[in-house]
Structure formats: C-alpha cells, structure tokens
Length: 491
Image (cartoon, rainbow, N blue to C red; front, side, top):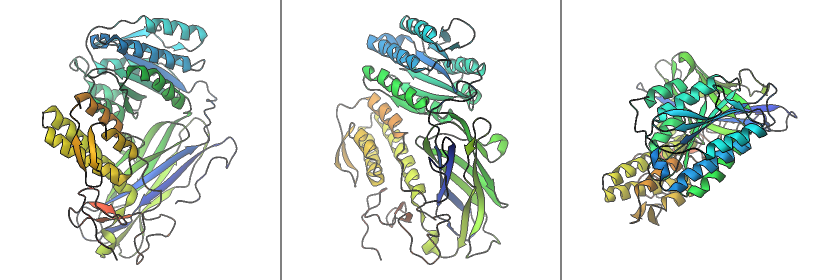
C-alpha cells in the first residue's frame, strides 16, 4: 500500500486528494512492443458536501423521454414524472435547473424562459406542475436532447453541469442530430447519467453516451423503483463539490502514453488535453476512482537489472477550492532477461482486464440471443459466470443468475433460463458496466514499498499465465478464471 497519502481528518475542513500506483514493473528486455500497464487509484476526501464558496456547485438538466412508446404501459410515463419530481425536490435553493421533454425533437418543459430557473420553493412547485402535465408522442432523437442540454448548461456558471437522462427506446432519428457528433460537442461540458426503463432501450447505446460523458448507465426492472433511484442518485450528486481533477502523466524520453481510461466504478473514456498528458475528470465528492494507464517504451540500449522511471503521475485541481495534493508518483520499469519475472502481471491490472472480458462475454451473449442462437448465448453467459466467480464479483453473479441457472460457477457450467427475454440482456449490459473494486492497492510492484524486488518470490498481487490457454491468473489461484483449467501443486 502506498504511504504518505493524505487521509480525511489530517487537516480539519480541508479537502485532500490521494494517489496510489499498482504495477508489476518487470518487462522483457527484448525488442518488440513492450507495454507497461498500471492501475492508478485516485481518492478525494473531506469534501463534506458543504457547498462551494462561489455559489451553487451544480447546474441540473432533467431529460424525460416523452416519445409515443412512453404511453404504454401508462405506468412508464407516470414513473418518469414522479422520478423527475423527486429529483427536483432534492435541489438546494439557488441551483440552476431545467426540465427537457424529448422525442424526435427536444423542448424545455420548465422554465418557459430562455435561461434555466433557480431552485426555490416557488420554482420547484411550478416545475413539478409542468412535469406532471407533460404528454408523450413522437419518436426518439437522443442527440437532440443532449444538444439542447448542452446549450442550456453553457449559459450557467455553476462548475458542475449534470444531465440526468431517461429513455425507454432506441435512438431512431439519428439523421436529424447525429449522436456521434453531439457527444463530441458535449464531451467535457457536463456529466451525463442515463437510465433505461421499459423494454425497448439499448444498453450499449446508453453506455456509449455515459462513457463519453463520464457518467453511469443504469436501469430499473419495475417502473415504481425509478423515483427512489433518482432520489439516491441526487443524494450522491449533491455531495460532489470538487468540479475538476486533472491526472497528469509525464512520460520520460523514449516512452509514450498509449491511453488512460477509467475502470472503476464505471468505465469512462479519457482524452488528453490537446495531445498533452493532462486528463481531466469531473465532479468529485468523497470517493475513489481507478484508472488503467498504458505506457509503451523501447528497451533498446536501456540498462538491465535496475529500476528506471518511465513516467511521473501527478494529481492537480485547477481553480476552485483549495485541495491538499499528494506528491507525484513514479511509474517504473525494470528491464529483465529473466522470464520468471517478466511473465507475471499486476493483480489489479488483471482484475480489470478480466472485467473487460466479462463485458465482452455479455455483449457476445446479447448478440447471440438476438440472432436466436440460444446455445451460443448460453456458452457466452457461462464464460461470464466463470469470470465473475474468479473475480469474486458476487453482485454480477446474482445478476447473471437471472438469465441462467448456475450449475458450476468455477467451470462456467450454466443453463439458459427459458423465460429470458431481450430486455434481460439489456439490464445485464448496464449492470456489467459497474466494476468491482479489485485487489488491495499496491500489491503489484509495490511502488515505494520495496515488494516484488528482483530475486524475491512474486507476491499475492502477481499473476501467471495458464498452461492451458495462456491467459493470466492470480499466482495463488487454484484454477484459471478464463478456461477453468485446474492448477496442480506449485513450488
């Protein structure tokens, strides 16, 4: 575990950021395309949800799908209205907000002025009335909904812009306002959480939106659950008082940054500012997020048998409130000709790569079921069960059990339930985008701790290749999480 990182309470009333790096530093010294993968754990403590000295932190847009499909069953529209009302009631006084009605176009339901309203007893009451009077009809153009949200939020000076989007259908009218173009225009402007309701929405479409806009995708099976989910989401959102946090990766000569992506609690795309190594993340409360860093380096002419610095990782908070920052941390490489060292990988890296493979298995199962290939869908869900079991992802196993009867989780032996429908797969897709936390931080190379030293035995944070399928498995595992091969006794 990294040491020297500020914790809550070290300075009364002060927000503190923390940074830890987990990696297996040994890479093979031969030429090729060696890549160093590391997991960055970034933490913020002490926000307290106590507001912002310059005024409201949050500006909120609520987007309601009001296409014709929302009229049947009528409980869908009623649940959407009750959920929007529940969210409106949570808004603190002074918070800029608006409600958008979405079909093949987008229109502001409240307020009836060009600018967003400010939350107060009077405006909340009027907004509730407007929401309850909304009617449904028309098609679905999600790009138009997000574009209007962007234009509304551009006029606000609150540091955190947030869109809460609800839909029961797929993006039918993309030619009118192409979603790909809109997402590029909205990226970095606000955070978007998206919810699916009913049985006609597309889980991967919601993930496409939320991954680009740094939010999360979720869904409800029962309409009456939606208002409570909105209340919980707003409670979490209102604790976020750090608008932006920048993760900077400074690569040494001969090293390049391939990517940095968020892998916990949900997957999100990160793009460096203008080709620099600065990656902006938005809307922080007291929480920890994890990011996978991939660096590429050439070992040609580099010393063997010693630790070399590949990159320096730092955390910064531009503008806004004062935040106590952690010291920069090195990402190391140790070029070695010893395959006993270079064949291992970091346990955290492998955990999140397993989670990615789980998502791929769920997507493949969804496609197979849509094509009527039930046997293939069952096979892919068995693979997902095997991975979830190996990761210790109990919640995901519970969700998978809605679609299959799990006969033997370690081997992935399952039977597809006959009553499974297409929307069950969509619920599974959104749920699978929420990753588990993974192994304890700092169990790989132990940057700054001295573990994993040359000549020492790999610790519990290392992984080894399976002799049957060559996939990585934890060094202490009894079977391979990818193919189920059972390991014999190990020296």
